[in-house]
Length: 329
Image (cartoon, rainbow, N blue to C red):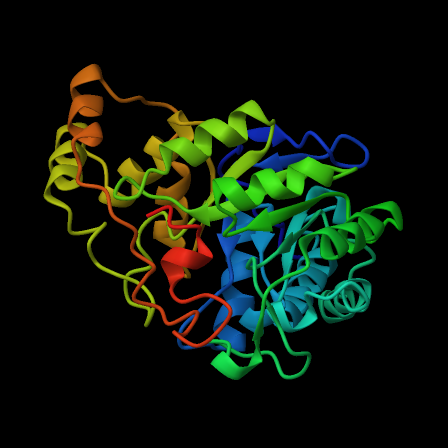
């Protein structure tokens, strides 16, 4: 007797993307595929397990090297009957700095589609507000290869991607209020999403307010601090205030972080290859915080967790990460 595919354990709420083709909705939680160290086999197995649990949104990027194994896992999920069709999935990928040039955007997206074995993406993001000399994709970007981005021409090429049907939606990642405002000043198709670092320790209230006013969905990456990675920190998961609130609700610190984001109207991408933690990360939709919880959450000292990454160097087009983000620290 053939194995019956496991029914999804959880139903995940969705948000409407304002500028998408065909009024596409995005699940509020997505599974990230940036892993350190990277293991293709482990990623494919985790994606299949995530689909069984109920995840339908998967976040990748050319930088992550995860497009190919993600595509293979999605094809396997279809073959196994874990999903009925491609339309059940929401797939996000990103344009890396070396391809952030007007004539390279469409070819870069087409290459991502080949890797993913897909005909279209649901969302394509400019990964960083920084261009680099075309060539090998790598991180960090060497200082001699960094270039200031021509936002107008690159965004026009992103709009072409959506008009050509290569992606249903387009958006941004790591864009500050100032840089988002720049894109909005000339965009024919406004960005649907801005994916940025957000957690209870870096709440980004000003950016969230601007995005809400402009009908741009905010997606949080590293909402748990990316503990255990070379770029991450344990400050979020070890925060005493979050531990206190978690204990009071009989929840995990991760669940407190994700529920907080959900109550702010923020969508989020979280990565775990552990089945039980995958399930725990979805168990956030049937309870809420109290006023006392919010008093404590709002008193958490705010600081960006990403600056320890040497994304830019003192001799590139930006003197520091602070300048790349327009000083919005």
